[in-house]
Amino acid sequence: MEEMEIQERPGFFQRLFGGRGLEDPEPDDQPAAGNASALRPVYRYNVTVRRQVFCFEDALAAANGLKRGEQQILNLSGTDPVLRQKIVDFMAGVNYAQEGTWEEIGEHIYLVVPPTAYVEIAPPSTRSQSFRN
Image (tube, rainbow, N blue to C red; front, side):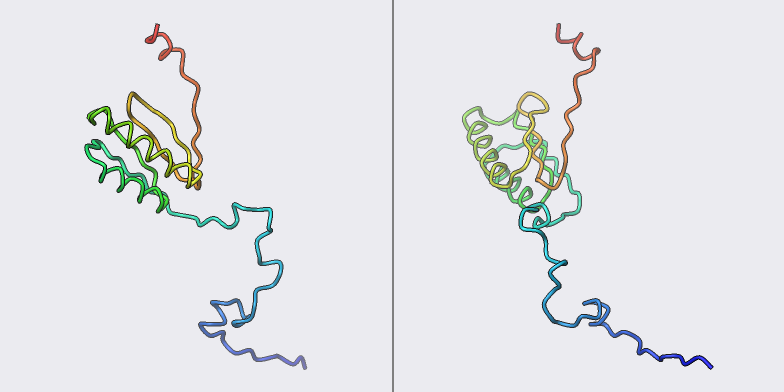
C-alpha cells in the first residue's frame, strides 16, 4: 500500500510569510538595483477635482493629495494672477519632487498626476483645429 504523509494545516503566519517564517527574504525576492519602479508604492486610483482654488491652503491640500498618490485637477481661473503664479510655481515644485506629470488642459486649468499613473496626450482632432482658425 501507498503511504500518505499527513501535513498540518498552515497557520496564519505560515500563510502570511509563505511558509518561510520570519527569516530574510530570498535574493530572488528582492527588487533589482536598476529597477527603480519596483521600489515605488502602488496607490489606488483617486482623482481630486479642485474646481476653484482661491487661497494657498487649497494648493497645500492639492500638494498633500499628490503626495498620497491622488491625481489633481486644479482650476486656477478665478484666482488672483499674482497668487495664481505662486500656486503654479509651488505645485510645479511638488510635482517635480514627486516625478509626476503636469499638463495644462485649459486656460489656467492644470492636471497634476503622480508617477504611478500614465497620461496619454491625444493629438487634437481636425474638428477642434477648425474652431481655432
